[in-house]
Structure formats: structure tokens, C-alpha cells
Length: 280
Image 1 (tube, helix red, strand yellow):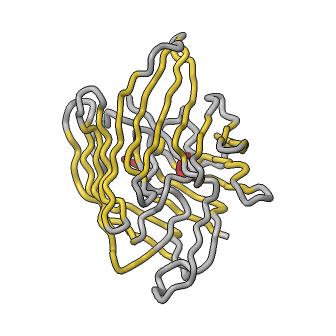
Image 2 (cartoon, helix red, strand yellow; image 1 turned 45 degrees about the vertical axis):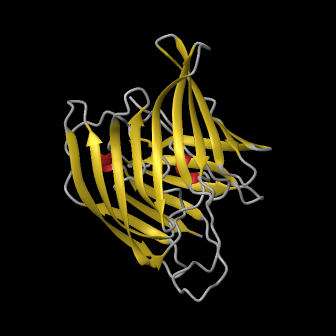
């Protein structure tokens, strides 16, 4: 099974007013988000997040509830210099660079008597777009074993390809090709292309952290290729239906298309089937 995560001190992005009327002109923050993880992830579930901020404007807490309103996570953020720690049972720690982007994340767990540390390292191109993530494990303090890599392609200010592959064999287990309406500039209140844990054992807060610049245009389609446990490959295209408010922020995003058959070999998805945002 393949894992991963992400980061940003603020979920708000701002822009100076320009002649382009599609460009956001005010700063908004996310207060609530509702997700339908659907068939792009192993655990198909519906959940919602309430995001709270401290007096400095940074995220203080994320409270996650399930479809019945039951709290399943109540995660506190602690800031210390260039580090963010979470109050999860996994001792989550994020290291940030000088501009606040996540460059390193580690979490620890005990599985079958082994002390396991999972590590993600993030690199960015010269324009501050995310371009690579490496994923590794250590067992009982032993040497670090790299097992997966995620590579991104950016063209004309948009993430156009996401590829997850095995480090040892180079086998691609998941790939997305993204298309855009290049005439429509938008802003997203979350990191849409951050790898998101799709199982219940993780906190799912990576989408609220800073992973560099977002795509500048409105997402219109996702073509997917996913390797399944039975060695078959699920392929297809999902159209994207979105709503954008008057300030240029995405307020909802829905991936429309047939259900995806098969059981994936990894548990990552950079996009749920649908998202609804409440901004303030």
C-alpha cells in the first residue's frame, strides 16, 4: 500500500486587482468544506471539515465530522519557527521552507510490533510549483527505504499531469491528466493536487497546507489511469463541473462520470469526487 501527505500556513490567497476580471481581488478564508471521496479512493466516504484560525490568521484547528455529524478528528496545529506539529497519535511534523511551503513531513506508528516512520519530501521548481514528492519508510530505526515517487508536470501555470510510481520497479500505479479552461482564472481555497490519504488511519489535513502555487485556470477534466490489485488498469475521463464566486474563488467542484471499477493498489487521490467550500 502506498501513502503520502501535504502543507500551507494559510488557506487564503490574495491578488492585486488587475484588468482580468476573472482574477481574485479580495482575500477569503475557508471556514467549512464538505467532501465526497467516492471511487477515486479506497475508503468511499463523505465527511466535512470546520477550519478555525488563531489571532495571527493561521490555522489553529480542523474538526472533521462524518456524514452523521459525529466528530472523527479534532486536530490542533502548533507552530514553532519553521515547523508545524499536530496533536495526532502519529506525531505528525511538517518542516517549512523560508516561504512557508512544506518540504518535509514525518509521522510514526506501531504496526505488528514494528516502529514505523513514514517520510515525505517535497521539491519545487524555480517558479514555486510542486514538482516531486518522494515517499519512504524506516522500521525500528533502520535504514530509510524509498518506495514511491510522485511527479508533476506544470504547463502555462497549471498542473497538467500527476504520476505516482513505485521506486523499485518504476511501475506507475496512478496517473491523472488535467485539462483547463485557459480563459478562466480562478483561485482554490485548498491545495487541490496534494496527495490525500484516502484511508481512515490518517488525518487528511494535507490539503490545507502550502504546497506552492495553485493552477491558475479553472479545471475542466481529469483523465485517469489506475492500477488495480488484480493487475487490471482502470481508465476513463471525468468532466469537472465547478462553481466560482464573484471574487474568483472555487466554491464547488464535482467530477462527473461513470463509477470507476476495480480496487486500486495505492490509497492516494489528489481529488475527491466532489467538494463544496464555505468561504469567509
